[in-house]
Amino acid sequence: MQVVEELAALRKPLTGYCYRMLASAADTDDAVQETLVRAATRIEQFDPARGSLTAWVYRIATNVCLDMLRTAKRRELLVKPASALADGELGAPLPPETWVEPMPDSRLLSSAPEERAEARESVRLAFVAALQRLTPRQRAVLVLRDVLSFSARETAEILETSPASVTSALQRARDALRAEHYDPTKLAEPRAGDQRRLLERYVAAFEAHDVAALTKLLKDDAIASMPPFAWSLQGGVRIAQLVASNDACVDDRLVPCGFNGGFGFGQYRPDDSGRLAPFALVAVEVEDGLISRIVTFLGTGDRFAEFGLPALVAAAD
Image (tube, rainbow, N blue to C red; front, side):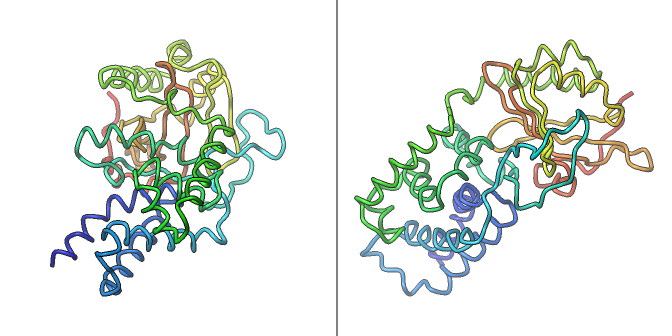
């Protein structure tokens, strides 16, 4: 019974690990379930003299993820269009497996405030997207060592290699992240009060289609994108003008939610009956107190419940 409880307690940590490896909500669910099933059915193979149950289970999870990644394409947060698209032209949608997918905080982060603060950065969309630039084994080494704090010896056992190989792979992974210009310090979480005020100001400006107010909240080099389309738009002024002039958004509403350790909204749009129904999950990244990136995940209305968002919201007066 104790082992069963220990395995159950690993579900959320494993979800965070597999998500960082796979960048897909559905694939993460499959990987975690497969890991727990294998662990439960092979528990007699676990030898406590050789290491902890946690490390043993993470070896199973790593093998599951590496198997899944053998034929998987690298997922992206932003795909540059193959050719220039006119403003407002989306082009053709790309396959779902092209994209890094969002995840709710509730599935990734512990309820303990100190643990949440330490873990937030490692589930941000920008970090998860940067991880996808690494080879699968480099990804595993970096997450196991730098995020989950396994020792070099434990990581070597998980990956069935040597501590020296782990150290070498970790250095290459760190160098590769730096080459991708990933700077986690720029995405540091602001104070809760600053976050709340920023979100409130953005919601008010978005719903009022206020170009001037939106422009003040966006960085000059902010970028907006809309998976599953390769379309993107850069420039705070251009983004503000597009949002304010888009007739399709005229009655939309935004509801804040926990989103990959950072900022996010559920965007609601009137349906055929006039009710405000789920339309898209929207991720917002912040740098230096201003919005630097807006990612609107089209076609995600069916995932609103995962993010604690209501099925319907009241229309504005």
